[in-house]
Length: 313
Image 1 (cartoon, one colour):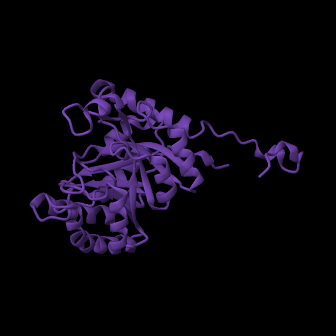
Image 2: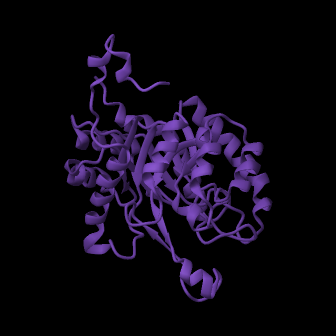
Image 3: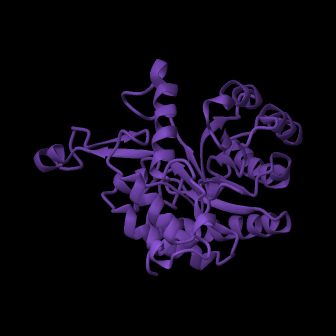
């Protein structure tokens, strides 16, 4: 029987920018990760993605590991040289996602730099309507990560998809069924937003989930506020932050969501550098536990048996 627990897989992100993605997958494939998200920062650096996809799948071999999502992070809305490379990278990822077995490409929306969020909407609509059509032709979905990248409503350099009010505006401009979100609770906690009711409202637009958390220092907020010199929030690896991932995964399941939760590391102020993979493997096991632990198939012995053994529906 297929393991229904793995309707939600737990994996991690793999940097693909430097050309070592397949080697990295091979290096950590036996640690228990169930999925990988290879990702690029601003540019694919001219890599042959069809060949990279083949090498990545070869590195996975016959293990029960999937690649559902590719990441392409940069600003495709403006016209500097690196912005143009990001836009081409999006097109390349969309065209070659199938070589990885992926059905989603994720990243930032981009932004008209230094302007209020709403000033980006015309360029957002122009660029992403075209990319949505390109992706639909390939059977690919587009997912925007909800990271502010130090931006806000008034100004920023990278992304407009960091606030639920912005999501309303974006999806009005691009009502395409294949445009959604790469969601993570960390970026909601940074804005002091409760992630649980957000899941109930927006889960139908979650195409991919990042496993990242945050610790909010309420004592700092009460004494110094959120715009002072004292840091009031830290991004954390799951299991070390404030989020109850049992509740998060339960809400995702109640919403009928399935897919991969891929851990985004490299942000935790404690479990980093030499402790990076220690933290990630701890997060992997924590998220599997939050998912409900190992699947136990006992349904068959109750079929046709004493109905009192079943909980009333």
